[in-house]
Length: 395
Image 1 (cartoon, rainbow, N blue to C red):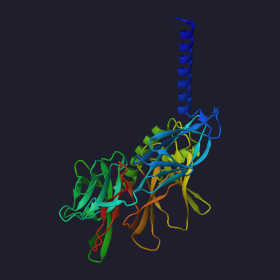
Image 2: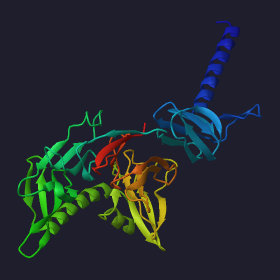
Image 3: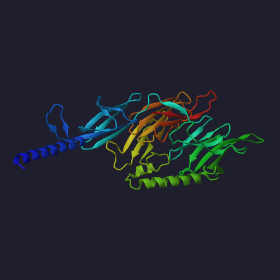
Image 4: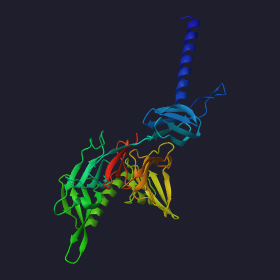
């Protein structure tokens, strides 16, 4: 081959190699091209991985429309950025995000509809809704005209509404016991049993006496058995739960004080079993905190965060986990109006508190459906005062 052709071939290969190398490092975020410079800056940069639920939202970085979600944005200098995720019909999501050199900081913006939809889940009454440990089912008491008693309703499935769900009657009222008069429900750790307490009034020759009876209900067989030693049963269940938690924490190097908190019965674990919510009393205030045991810890996340701080003299909110384990469902009952409250979605670091519902609430227990698209509340829209389970469609 003539020398001229060899030189042309060599130059072509060098050009292809140089272009490929540039594109590789640019997409990794290691290279940026300055807007006011004509040279390539090889300083270390980072990348933002942005997702949204639902998809196809716009991303603004420091107020500038940059891209659409479900993409990576490379070439960002290390530092703090104000990231906003917006989509028509949804409440904007905004958060300060720190970018680190040679790392990808991932965010997932959970967007809440500007007009959440309410749909009935029951229509014959519901009381004391209690979520199963798996988050897949809710048990409740119902004065159903045909089948009053204790019911369980599934939350998983595509059609979570009064027409799409298939509630199960665990046990029906009998002439000897009105189970639907129950005042509390506790699930067993394996979700095969329910411990319920029923209060009844018994007539005597002297006066009426209020008595309390506790039963263990077998969900599969629909049978009830009076519990003589409630404390022993609850201790057995607590032991079973503690053993499961300890197995999760075996490889987590936690300080002894945090380990004790993690195993406390009042601590609420996230669906992913890697985070837990606990309360810390300090100087007349209650701190609601989340501890994250994920290993490795996602870029930009902290091991421990404070969600909110409430004065002990104020009404305390109820907090449950949202299905993604990075958000919480916050229920704040009105201190002046009875049976009224506000339901919000809030990130575990206390940011992006978004109101979902503000109206009648018959219980502060609000739960996320496994799919994350709906929340389940107990409310009433009837003059009779009958309460029912409703879903709030947030997207």
